Length: 221
Ligand code: G3P
Image (cartoon, rainbow, N blue to C red; front, side):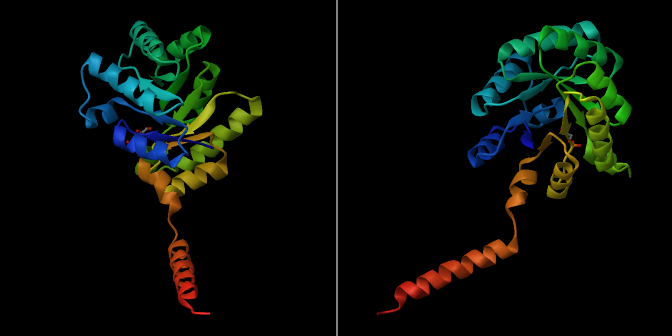
């Protein structure tokens, strides 16, 4: 399973990268706005900065909602760096754009996916990644994880190459259950990854080991 971090915060991206387990980054317009990044040249520079930190796919989302606009924006984004993946929303013109980019060899991530039918369409259109938003489904009393299982089943039936990128992952249990269900990638905030480290028995055990070691080295022979 690949670990992507879902943020535009450079410090958090660096921290995840330093841990040595980071495979890529996803961003979206809300995450960019949260970091105060606006204006075309600043946005472009920010994507380049992220690509400098992480050697893996970096999803950069188009803002246009019409086919021509998405193509224009996507081609510009893809030309920035070989690791850029163009993030396209699951709407009619988005599906057309996914097909267009796929034929051009431009990598894509189909975002805002909330149903198996949408995921099937994204795969048919040649998306490299499909992003089902599990946390947002949970938010409206719908089981987001069930969708991951459904998409896995459908993609396996037909050997679709589209990778399931579980998005809107909110906590470590989401991540673990996505791994059990066979999601290819997860993307979430830094704490969803670092949270995996935590276990009180690890802390208690380490404390005991160190105390025993100290005691033993103080024993005079
Ligand atoms: O990757 C999609 C993600 O940014 C949405 O997450 O927590 O805003 O639903 P969230």
